[in-house]
Image (cartoon, rainbow, N blue to C red):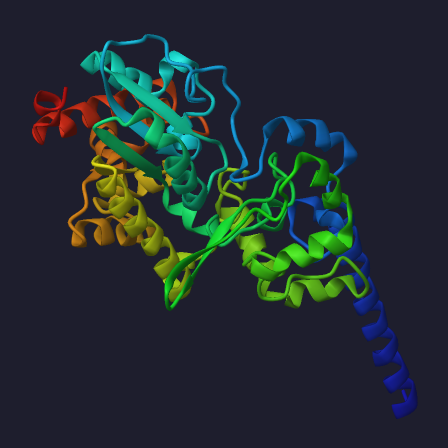
Length: 379
């Protein structure tokens, strides 16, 4: 075979291989692409069918809020007691998604101590939103104790302005306020949507793109395009990281980017710590005893059961709270001590904590409060 024919043969073979790779990549994106994140601003807009639910939950200060017909807007309590002890703020692990009102850890704790425990948790909240709700609602209840509940994943939420950037398939396609940390301290960036009528603007790709200015998750690190050449996705660092994440983790609205390592990033870590410091100081200013209730996903508690220590992100969070001398209730450690084996953890969790998991958190929290004398000395 002449050199010319050899060159033609190799070129043709290469073209066929590249064509096959491109076709396979196209089919992969077409059939499985919805599981992955691509950079497409139009895809971050909302469907008109989502607007009614958004309007019902809309809150100009907080972004969204659970709506309950209770005295303070807290989650309904199964019993009312003559005195009150604790107001709990936080995300869905404080709200206790996926269980009934009488199966939350605040409800179990209230029944154990015969005092009111108010549940101000809200699904999807970042620690910044939980803090803002504390500022707004705590002065109306003025309980002797006040808690801020959080899981390590919450650091991902405090650098977010629009949840669809963080997780395009989120069940909460809404905007939120956030803080930025400057030399002078924390500065609040208000919720970019201030009226329910303006929620329609989330249908505008131009408006949505402008939300990315203060959002860490707006095309972080160069997301892949859903366009030719489709084979380029295999060379994209974000895509490969997400592919491995899908293989190793269960991706959901609770934990959409478990491979993210913001606890290793100084700017995000300092922002999170500044929010914790601010909550501690403001609670003290109100005359309350602040408590940090650190909860965890099942995978994090499983790691503790297997290794005897917290995973990195949970260890970083709890170490900071201990170093600062803050009141820390480590629910992850408590659940791990109850589990004994990874298999038994299935009883403590659904996606969030199960009724049994919440009951165990309440039992250990009651012991924690009693060990510090707060059950005996508070009215």
